[in-house]
Length: 283
Image (tube, rainbow, N blue to C red):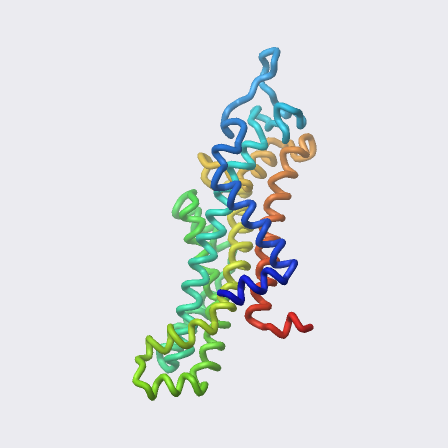
C-alpha cells in the first residue's frame, strides 16, 4: 500500500483522477447539505407560474427542468447513485475475479477447468443486453443494477489474475513456503495474493468506470428506478421531454459529470498500472 500512495504522489494523471474521484465522493456524502432544493420539488416563478425550462440564474445555477425542478439539486443528489454503483460494483468485481483467478491458477486441474469454463461462458454473454434483461426481469433498483454489473464483469479480471497466479506458484519463495509446512490457502492468500493486488486495483478503477457507464445507460433507457434521482435518469427525462436542444443546461451537466467521473476511474487506473509495472514509469 505504501507503493500505491508513493506512485500516486508522483503520478500526475493518477493524482488528478484521485482528486476528481474523492471530490465526487464528498459531494455524494454531503449531498443533502449541498443541494439548494429538494430535487423533486417543483419551483415557481415570482408571478406564480411553474418555472419550466428556466435558464441558469442566481436562483437556479444550472436552470430548471420541464417540470420546474432544480437541475443543480438533481445533479448533486444524483451523484450518490453514481458513486454508490461505481464503488460497490468495482469492489465486488475485483473481489470475485481476484479470488476465482487465484484459486484457478494455483490449484489447477479440474478446479481450473471448471472455473475457467464458467469464465468462457460469461464471455459469451453480451454485457449491456445481459444487464438490460436482468434489470427488466428483476425490476428497477440500484441493487439490481449492481447485481447485473457484478455477475458479468468479474470475468475480465479473473483471467489476468489466473495467469499471474500460474507464474507465481512455481517461484522459489512459494516452494520455500511449502517446505516450511504452510497450507495451500495460507500460501495462496499470504504469499501469492499480495503480489497480484496492484493488478486487482487496476480492475477496481476500470470496473468503477464501466459500472457508472452501465448504470447511466440503463437509466437513460428508462429502466432505472423512477423514484430515485440519478444522472442517467436526468438524461432520460430530458430526452423524453424532447428538451435536449431546447435546454442545454439540462442535458450537459449530467453528461459532463458522467464523463468526468468515468475519466477519473481510468486516470486512477493509470496510476495503479505503474504500481503493477514500475517499468512504465521509466518509459
